[in-house]
Image 1 (cartoon, rainbow, N blue to C red):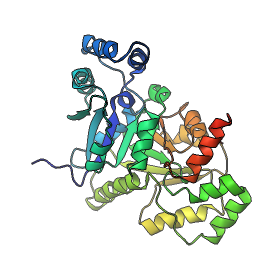
Image 2 (image 1 turned 30 degrees about the vertical axis):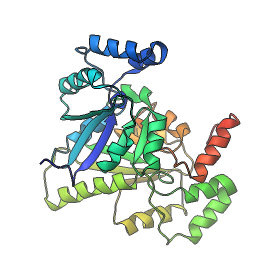
Image 3 (image 1 turned 180 degrees about the horizontal axis):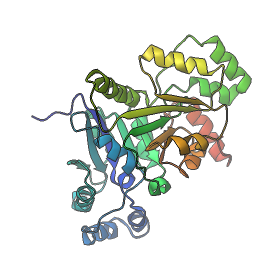
Image 4 (image 1 turned 90 degrees about the vertical axis):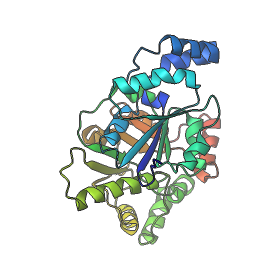
Length: 314
């Protein structure tokens, strides 16, 4: 029996992997039946790469011994042919797909112990995060940015992404001075793991394997921490990663500077951040995914209150 245990396991929705904005509009305006009829009629028409396509392609190039990618969708099996025809046309080594006919995909992802779930639906990403699955909502406008890099390049925000959200909650509720005092006081105390820590750990295992085998691999992994933190609050992030036994290849402590300046030069296939204000801007230069807060997070409550007032979270 085939097993994917021990691999880095990625689930990607069809709407994140391919550009399906027109089809989604048909679903929203004309209904499910019209959408399904359209997909069947056009099942030989190849879909164009979507926002998650660059990172999925780069992950697959690490090799089938290390990475498994599964395409998932709440659509019916009857619409799956167009997706798999497009996967084949683009040369992606994806042979597994879950099409649930409207039912939630989350329990299936939990049973497979998925390391990363990329979707185009906010509610799906939130449900995944609430169930301990690393997930992000892709900014679909980023589909036009295709990198030619032979490396797998991934950039992460720090607080509420790689790390827990406790420090950011202090910043939101008490301000910058209180945040700085807290980080200096707790500089030697590792932060809790955030929603993307599991994914970074899985990447780190493959990096270690490459180094130990001294492989002359075509696709190497390059990770970067891109955070609004600055000195002295930067120290706690470094010491936390040390405590986890993980190294990132590059780190940028921007102290509030616009992250797009760094991202444009780093050229990741994906950038993860917890705030739409950052991922929206990042998506102008690179593919970006927004990592939602857990439903019981103080930050989720703060965000919802801000949205009710029509405020934009900074």
